[in-house]
Image (tube, rainbow, N blue to C red; front, side, top):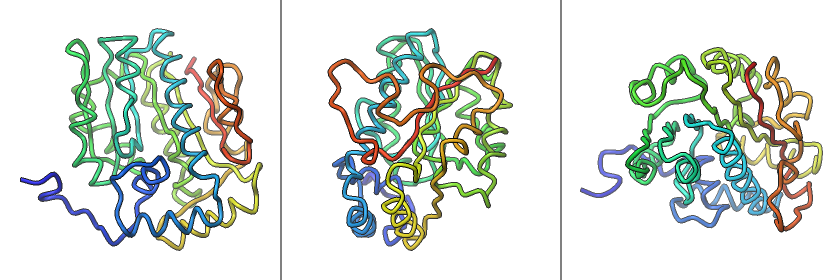
Length: 267
């Protein structure tokens, strides 16, 4: 059987995960994705840099949390596997770490095996689920069998919530997810903002909307609301490249990231 046998790929409909894969230089994307990505790059030529910066933040934040003792991770909006994946970083530090990936793109499901190759001591799982239905996501058997929600979990919502407009209850669904996590859990997030390149971002939102993907950029204060009631780790809500940059990491103009990042802990 082929990799995509039995999977409804909807190849004629661009998907944000596959567009992101294209920005990262990946190959798991199709004509509709590349066409939509081309329109996006035409109005925001820095998108490839922004995608790399976002990926770098995922690496740094996962490393920081694993070093702080976290051994359970829930990554929603996983996207196409691109090594090193979150479990590779976490399990390099915590070999027994347990990681659950969740995404609503059927192609991510088809490639899920790449996300399940963890350490012998640890465990990884993949669930097909949508962040806009948090109750169903949290009840998924693969999740419940892999991580213990009674213990601290690092929840990653990277480059995801700008695809959930206020009309779909973005803040409410995040509160639902937060309320299900034990004290000591972490919320990790990156989110597009219009504050550094307003014209580019306005055009980008229009491109995604025209391609059938709702999008909403948010201000720093609107993004900070997602962390309400939790304690932000230093340096707080900052531009993505400014969150604990690695030594020697090349500087990136904030307009080429156009996103905020933060990590917070539940008291």
